[in-house]
Image (cartoon, rainbow, N blue to C red; front, side):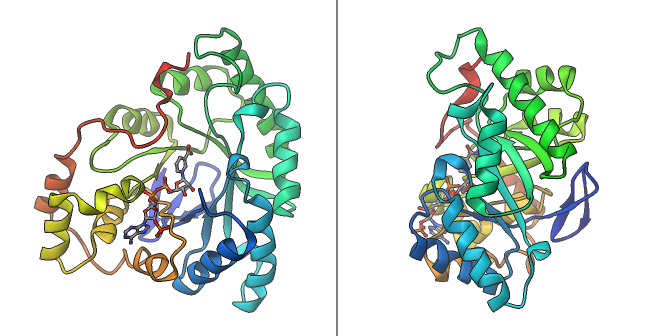
Length: 289
Ligand code: NAP
């Protein structure tokens, strides 16, 4: 993976993916989704991150069908990500991915991820988990070969899950999506992704909103006359890491897009990275075998 421009990253499929995408977790209901996607397209977002478990694939699909023509855009102008739910991990993976396509009302999905290394209903130490992961991956590989999933990847995988996948896959993952922000710098996972040529993507860059009140983040923001959210997102994209801020507020959607017209100094980057304390705001996959 390498940066080919300041606004996108090159995936190992040869496709460019925008560095900025709209997160959609907790964006539910046709009106909220429509409003956020509308604001995002106006602000220049060209990527959208959904998942079967967010229960908003159908609303996102409908919003895009209406809004792309309104903004003079086509399907090819946007990059859509969705994810296989843990309840479909294993033998139901093919069915789950096809359901995502149908819910989104798309002929193809730009990037489709295994959302979680485990399987819903199985305890973390259940020995069926590795087999289910590998069965899901084989289904994604098949749909990739058919052109229905342009790129395939994983989410919430640990270094051990990544190594397991790299040893058995026919097609290597294009991307790993995990929680990443100054309090969780994910040094080992980033090194593993670098080693395997897998794009490393951040979620919960704002710490689910909680990091915008961190004193160091606020001070850096004040000094560079930016908002704390912009500083948190810039910290990631300045390292070449794509981000997916979520907001249902159109003003914040716009605010979160202004990342490419300023630079953080090396000192500020280091001050932010020094906040690393392995703090997770989201789920913790480290116990899934
Ligand atoms: P996030 O983007 O870190 O934070 C979202 C929260 O911050 C919301 O409460 C939002 O509230 C608030 N916010 C947004 N912009 C703000 C701003 N400029 N100033 C102050 N507050 C602001 O959290 P996230 O939704 O957990 O993560 C982002 C996306 O990553 C998700 O939506 C999803 O697409 C993806 N994700 C993936 C996984 C996974 O397992 N793969 C897990 C978590 C997230 P308002 O909406 O009210 O603005």
